[in-house]
Image (cartoon, rainbow over all chains, first blue to last red; front, side, top):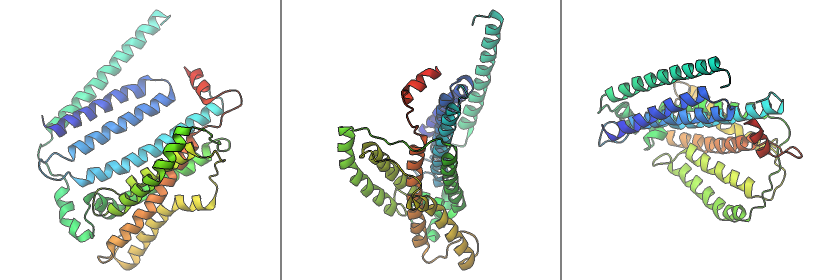
Length: 94
Length: 239
């Protein structure tokens, strides 16, 4: 098992654990946190698999995709938290 | 757990869920292990095209040249999220008055350094490690620190310079894209000469927009404290 493969497996494990958390937890904030951990797992897989060829520079395309993904994940998280705030403010019993 | 049957059903469905997720994990893990160990992916393509892009950082070249349409849409998503947050959130912006001496001290020391580092990352991003998103994230952190450590003035997000700054990244991308249609062959196509200047222009716009959007999101997520109940108290009520 190479080091990038190990990192990729850790990313897969993070993804699966947070998939469980997204389904099982009831608090919406925890669901948002779980989705964040999930996306971190995906990013870890992408960045790890970008460096499979030993001795060369990593593949820049997955890195660019991860940078894009991080920004989109932050946007989605902020939007989700504002939606949760709004539901609470409207008394939806969350 | 009071009702025996419902509890059993719940445990059974949870066990089925755990089994399903374990299967997903095993499947994904086997896929990752089965991948060829020495695949170079798109590295070779990027490296052969890098000389034509006019810059030397392959990630920046991917973001701003080879896959610039992705980056355009990403900036659009960021702006869209800010607009949605501003539309959904209730009430005015809170006035943050932490009065924290340590934050104020760190703000005085760190914010100038952060602005300097952001500027360096922005300028270095075309040829070395760095780039617009990294610079924007550090600028945004400086902005958040400024708000937390600042003098506690009421926050205003409707000011025209802030709105223009939020949109400048997307506007720069669209303008460059349309100019590419006129000057070169296609949308977001750059002429060979001056491509690095065009990309630097895009980087500046993206940095400003990313920084302002992140600070705007931070402020938009905050809730105004209602009289008598703090944010912490409402969080506890949820459990």
